Length: 373
Image (cartoon, rainbow, N blue to C red; front, side, top):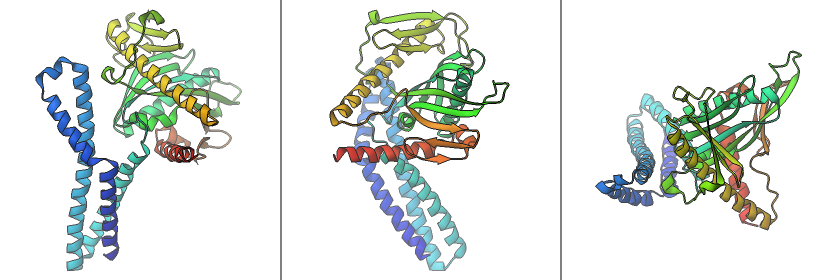
């Protein structure tokens, strides 16, 4: 029982720390401001701004509710523990121990927020999978990765929305554009940006030989129009329409309404086929293009800073970040952090959190080291 009392004091300390890193006072002030703004009838004449504010308010309410629920549960446990001590009740003590363990796990999840230090970590994520070297195996690998991230998103109650998919020549897909929507989606997924390598016995090779294939994942924060100051010159765009194909979902249009937008100065290509009209696909595609352009500018600034500081900078598209080996042994290893597991099946089923968390710790420590130079 004495151990339970000590554990409860530790939980109370963690609650005080949570009040600090959640910036609870600031959240409550911002909530009042947003509630006042949203109550204005004329706000809804600007639907994009209204939607952005509504999303922000929902996220703030979620953070405040998490804190308040933790505070309430600690208070309940404290009362129950006092009762167990007073009555020397072993059964109640066991119940207290279970509740303490549950609360500690909830604090562990909440404290991950301290790792989300990026400017855009709270945003949704716009992603593109692109099959690379490896032929049909690479295209099949892209399809497997799409399934992996779909399962990961579902485990976090996030939504994965397929924007466009280009079918592979024999199997899988050559490219997929998709959004993952959820609180801190980009904060999680920015750890996945880069080239993923698969080693296995190829199911497409009659000789049963080991085959290596590569698929790249690009990840950028997704911005609503109200949140981004990027102007796209229509003269710098090539816009093509085509008939959608591939397993894009039940709402993929079968008319020539799919849109492919090429930004000529950068070579960025955005395809969108999941909306119900050509106009809607174009608008959605432009929104994604603006997000990608904003992320490109951010990465350029980061690269320039690294150049000035003399850092060896090796991130982004084209860098191999993780290997998934299925033969002659089984292992998934992140080449940046060194973290690995032999349970490759679990990883391919979407259990990616330990890899993501390991990278976030590594990234934070690297940033701290660089800032002290």
